[in-house]
Length: 78
Image 1 (tube, rainbow, N blue to C red):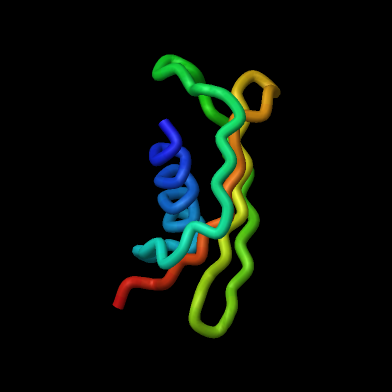
Image 2 (image 1 turned 90 degrees about the vertical axis):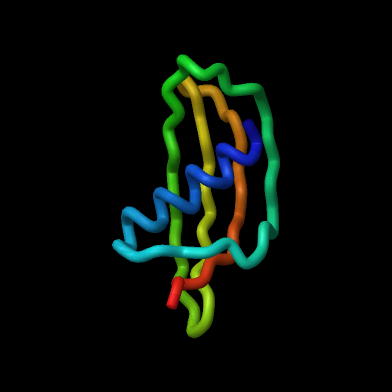
């Protein structure tokens, strides 16, 4: 489930930026509760573009309860 949250952050960033992204580094990963397969997960994403990387800060919640947070450093696929 933790890896799924990291992938949700990366894929959400890809959808927002309309390009393929690769995870270069996981700066922070905090998993606050298990996520059951039938639950709907809300993702809040903040992106900061830098010259060679994109920082993605994501927080996850289920029915208003925090489920996790992560900070990823991403790069655009060439």
